[in-house]
Length: 105
Image (tube, rainbow, N blue to C red):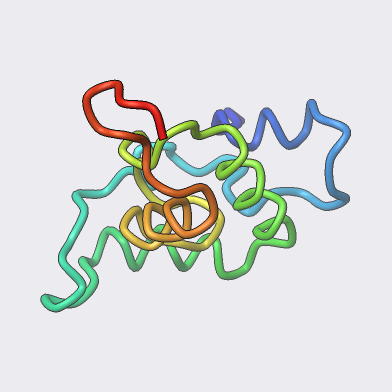
């Protein structure tokens, strides 16, 4: 059985108790083509979100993702039970936007 990258990190880290639901799942599932919410969620996004919905470490996964990602534009895929667009919006809400063109805040 092959662990996804996130599942390997969860198992290796002194993190939450529980086995990640993504353990043994093809990592590509969590990087679907991003959809516009007004068009509804894609089948691929729904499949990834379904895995996260049953995960006992989903909150830890989301907080780890937000801590590791330094800029919102680098947020990709489904992680921590949220779509890419939702995590980007949350990242901006929590950390703000990076100043444009190297300008200081």
